[in-house]
Length: 159
Picture 1 (cartoon, rainbow, N blue to C red):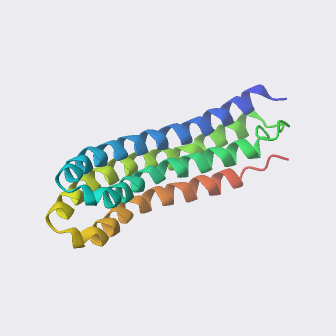
Picture 2 (picture 1 turned 180 degrees about the vertical axis):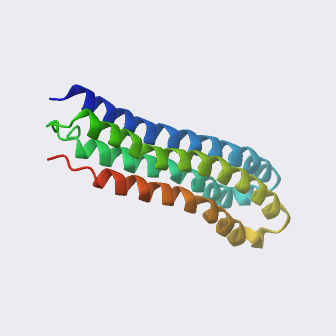
């Protein structure tokens, strides 16, 4: 078994999940801080705030998906490690960069946008749908990063 190849691939899986998770944590925290103020003013808005807080949390799912694909492809999840060269391990490590970086930035900036959107909702509760649409536009970029990562991961022949 090529230990370096497996190690590089595991590093890639860790980067994908780690960066995406950090982006989500930052975004949820930022939106939550703003949402807490709205809930204090109007406790009936808890459901809307909770919905909005879930949006930047989705970036962590994209990183987790990429990490699981890498780990599945190298056999870690089944306990039967694939024979992969250090070159293929390095490609899998690099495959984590698109989803990791886009989810990190998207999660953070989506949280910022939602925090501003919560200010809109505090003045006009009927604008929830508009805030969700704006937040979804920011998330699109992490979906693009996930797509590129999946294409790279699936492009590495491990047999």
